[in-house]
Length: 77
Image (tube, rainbow, N blue to C red; front, side, top):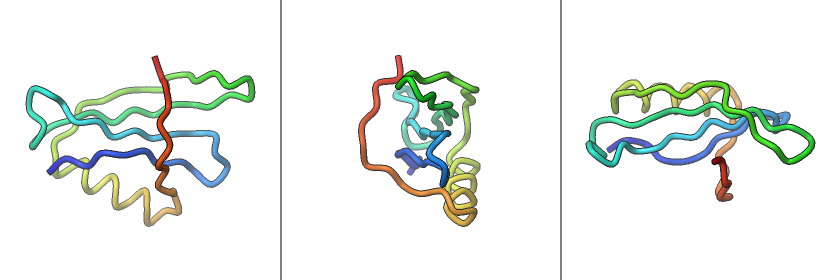
């Protein structure tokens, strides 16, 4: 299953959001990198479609590199 969730770096300046593709939720989705600014605004750095395998690898690598899981909900659009 495609991972879903939000990860943030140790300085809490970048968010990584894993989203399922609703047309193919088991096998594909998107990864979005957001820059957080001090004025509570968010800037999209990039968004990319990933397969389930690549997304799981990226998710595991980010956790291994010290990124933390976040349970908060953010409005990004």
